[in-house]
Image (cartoon, rainbow, N blue to C red; front, side, top):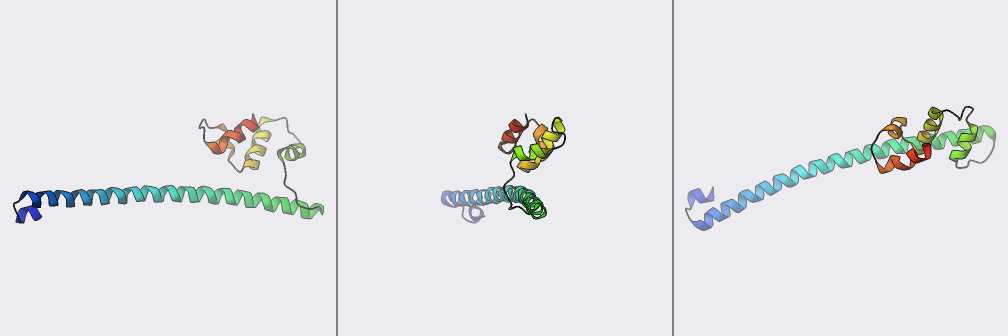
Length: 124
């Protein structure tokens, strides 16, 4: 580049600085792509949780409309009391997973993700 035209020490240093700038710009561009991926992942997780919570809210509203009572926040205990066969592990896992809007498989995996620690303890 510049050092090929001007054969001086300063031209060589400027050429090196220009190349380092291009490398740094490329690294930042690559870093922004991974950041975009993380943002997309968080957006997808948020959308899933929002859909789950919306479903639960609609269920509560439908139940309250059928019974004629005011909608209230269901608790784990009231859901547990409504279950016909609450002695089975699968029933407990399904109710806890539904309450916390997570998949039953998430209760069984060995990760220590913050989103499954409390539901897993409740299920135990």
